Length: 234
Length: 254
Image (cartoon, one colour):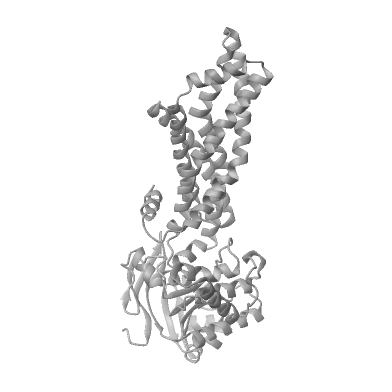
């Protein structure tokens, strides 16, 4: 928490190192694209399979599309993105900063009169907050595509009906509330990764320990905050 | 008493970690434009002392005067100003893994000067040449030997032409030839760059060769101070045991 406030206070102070921000956005965002797209595609596919099974019991198969779209935008898109990026980038952030800490590189920054919070922590948090919503848009789209593939191509739901029901039931608010969630998750996973890395002690073993803790803690915090954000927004 | 020759003056410095008292009322003066070496046992608080001098640690009590200014009450922003006068060579060099040799040395220049890329390049080439590493620009730190890493670390520490350069165990873990080369670099740092050198070490032979004055740290205090000749003549049994490297004596091995 103190780290977050420190980081925010440095947000408005020069020097601004724009290149660092883009580098982190590339690392957190662009490099996570493939894994997020892939997992979201299959999530959408399995969702269609499961809801088709349930809805066919009372002849509501055409609602499969709307169900998949609502689940993805409101819930699964942000959460899957958050968890995948935690595994991919949150762990890497923690391991990198942790290694820099135990090999005195963080001290070296300080000695060179460069604030390590401003230099290391802030760009990562900003990148997480910006990139997670963007990844979530991809995730939503891929999930719905997966649902369409399974529902329309495999299970013979009428394609027009499938899309029509999505338009009917999904509002813009569903999408952007999901994106707000994603932004919060991005803040959580980068902050936890940085925090655990920053206060790493005890050599290689310490880096391993704090990386594990960062992933577990981020995942738990994402799922818990997801409940409260949902209760608050919808 | 502080006199004009002293660049750093420390008065009754206390620091404990939990119940373990590392610095126990330490007094120390370090002279301007000299090679000042602090000797003492491994784990005896030498690194803790050097981290106090550069403000990475704050003491429980005491004063640390850098060129007459007490740095203990300074906040991080004010400390950053003082630190620009310092360069530091870390024990494991602490090069940035993600940057190559050239970028490591250029790093403080990009951050703290408004020099153009070509001016920075000139400085970097000059510093790398000074430590005997021309043409290694594109190597990554992981590809370098321990001695080379330390020399790059020294080039980086000297990039901003600091007034004071701190060396944390500069020769530990190096072969004798490389250790001698590093020791020569320490002397050249003083002669060519006009910087005050502060070295912590437990390498007695090298210390006797390159030091202008030696302070011995033992149990959280400075127990002896003087030129190499004076230290060698010192009658304190602790000092004698340490500089002769004997297992028997008042210093207990545990």
